[in-house]
Amino acid sequence: MIEEVRKGLSSGLYHGIGELHLIGGMAVHWQQSKVFVALLTLAREYEVPLMVHSEYSSIKPTLSMCQENPNSRFILAHAGAVINPSQVEQILQACPNVVMDLAARDPWRYINNPITDKKGQLLPDWKELILRYADRFMVDSDPVWPVDKATSWDESDSGWMELQRFINFHRQWLSYLPEEVAKKILWENAQAWFSTNSTDQI
Image 1 (cartoon, rainbow, N blue to C red):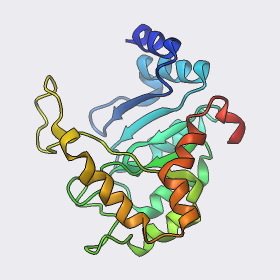
Image 2: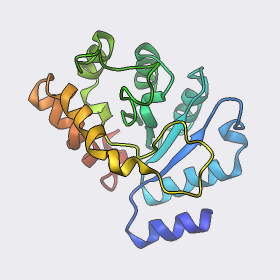
Image 3: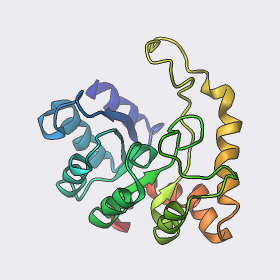
């Protein structure tokens, strides 16, 4: 796998690595995974970010990963998935080399950890956090769908057919934010984070 990743990065067609899943109870500590360490090395070599999907109930593994690799860039998928705004902020404060991705944080997937109310506006804690760290959030859309389809890894996800709905969800809550903040989250932050030599901006 490592050689395939190297081949992809060498081609110039890929500008990041991931999404790499680390799920509590199912994964060893990142330091004990030869594959993870090798991917970190490749990400630094090619100066690209590593996208990590972490579903640990504790933020300690994530903090360990980003603090012990200060010269690596990380995207935390789904803004930590199961963690709350105060925990997200702890990571942002401790690790300037991490940005938060908000894919799948919609009413149809992470339904137990919503970021918006029924009107489509950000919940107060999330709004305060995103405004405070406007340079550290970005949106995209995860095509995994339906969410209860966990066993058919050999079949294409049907989420591509739902893409417009996922995008519209983000556009709605972003429409309530100041225009300059919305622009950062919509595309400017991603453009900066995926640019070559973005470690200079950390």
